Image 1 (cartoon, rainbow, N blue to C red):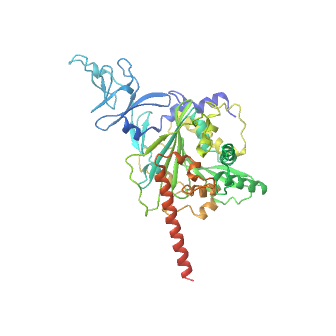
Image 2: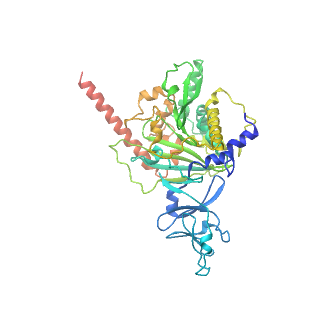
Image 3: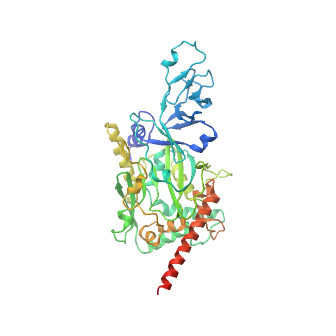
Length: 473
């Protein structure tokens, strides 16, 4: 457990707080670029600060304090001009650097505008998102994590607004063990209540519980540990009766990329994804699941003018929690802890090793900033493209890595197999994609078709290989 003081130290992100000062050393996604195309002016909130994002008529992005320095009218009602944003009230015009360019109601020879500045922050577009930096100069490079910049990939975003602190979300990134009961037994119960539960052996929830039963029958349990790398750590996982030379124990899976990006892998099939919970303020988090479907080179990737974005309600039309898909189960576990978890009351076990590891990593980085030093994942020079592919065990040569050997090595094999099947109809009569957040993808039918085409291609390759092997005998 933590003391109340320690809990505050790790969770609060406002200006001047220890964790807030750490977070201001990083770039943060603040808005989907597709929505800014619909309306070039938008109010945003990040790290307890209310701001206005805009794109002027020359195409430049700006992020400015919410209220005009004149009479404090919100720039959310502002007018984008060729050079900046104009306050709707009295016409004061500010550029993306916060300089006041015009005060049209003041005398023509007045120098007053030269004395007025608005607070602004650097912004950049990457991967269909607008990113902002709220920290001190000099501004670091925006890290170009792999899925945001891959030259081939069909991208989708599914988002939720969560009524809880960001750390509750992030602690789940270090928690592999929750998948057994949260995505197994709870999933079964949710479908049972809907009258939809079947004995489908290919369904994730049934595969998960079958694997758990067999492990318990062996008298085994799962061991977890962090496997550290220069960007954070992966999660090592091993059944207690297996050899510790296993890659799942020494390479690990699902990298935590500090401060709050979760990648998945080594991946199988075409599905690649990130999850990140952006700290809006101390009690609200913008959670985004970012999908990049990477198909074989023989399959054409549909063109995208922008990355599609869907904001999904937490509850259904009856006001009940949506618990019949994986991310919905995750989220209810996060925000039902309360707005900020009271960690003075918790009791952790050995299965929480990676949760503890993330807290220790977070504290160490807060302490570094407080001491005037620089935390990890701040990049000042060099190549910042596809950084996580340099993590040991994660680089690959473009072949289908969702092979039986990968499934056997990594303990998440059942999940990997299940996620190959998203285009197929389950025993319950719906597509397997409906069991996961992918079901809310705005271009869902395109995604399903990419799964179908990829599976057909792999099947043809397998048949060709088998025919070649048979003819060679």
